[in-house]
Length: 112
Image (cartoon, rainbow, N blue to C red; front, side):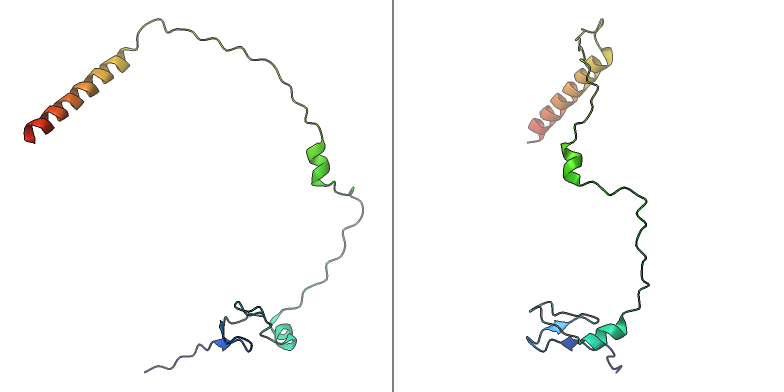
């Protein structure tokens, strides 16, 4: 029978199982790994140089919300016009669907 290679760690404070590479316990929040172990697993990060001050500073979102929006509002006139002739397709479809519903109703009553 093959042996299990996967080992699980346990929290020293509460004894709960902790995932690999976890720094804190998900159950109690205590630190699981020492700082040396964390430093060994992390990769060094290159230092990022600050951005030159050639750009203007960013404005806050509050000032953007307070800024008046320029709308070009124009009144819209809505006119309802009656159609010139009756929609023949709609009338035919309504008659066919109503006749089909009546046939199904009569068939259901007959078979009941």
